Image (cartoon, rainbow, N blue to C red; front, side, top):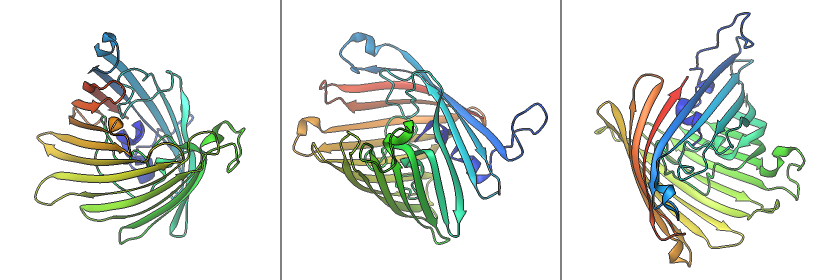
Length: 336
């Protein structure tokens, strides 16, 4: 999940963000809102590399702005701007932004209704931003996450998506993202670019839901193409203040071995905050030496409406070195 989604959960689309003041001193209009967030990450990863320096204390940041405009009250023009300096042992944290500390446009699209459908189109669309189905309700804001193949999160470019939902909780979507087309020199659907198609079907009920995701990358831009299939469910029992999520994902690349990933996560309200724990296991077909497992535990506490702190621990098998990557991290998140 991206930084801005973590902090604000798409409030612009829900009408929850306070409008920027409209006066002669601002360039914003009554149709536009501004939100954003920053994450400061401090931590250390033991056995995270081949040198002792990679077990020292590190700090990184991520910063993102989201400018949202609506012209009819039902449409949304969204532009995301982000910067970050993640590149070391903490670069795999969910909040990490690897942009070389330079600002860049991370998303730019326009969404509008057409009957019972919602259409999204734009020059910078992320595949995991236009999925209607929810395969996991896990907070996913620390290190581990569900559906690493079907919802890769790195498939970004010019794209179009259509989503459907009804009052019974049924949701569905279909999207086409041209990954190689962001520099405008590669045609959408061209032979020299990667095109990713994704179809989802799901159900979101009261305290229960789940979904299926099918994705395919044609690999025509020089990368390895793949076909993926995955699904997951989530459940919030009335007897306890917790949410459980289970997801299973598979990938069949054009070259290399097939892989599967099992994810189990739980968010549990404890005291004034949320205790989160997750486990995942990745199996590589025909190569047991590349199989890996991992787990994490974190606790998120809101200092106020705009600042939260999350200390946590994770342990992951490092198949390249044979050692476990054991990390102790504290993240401070700011939202506005």
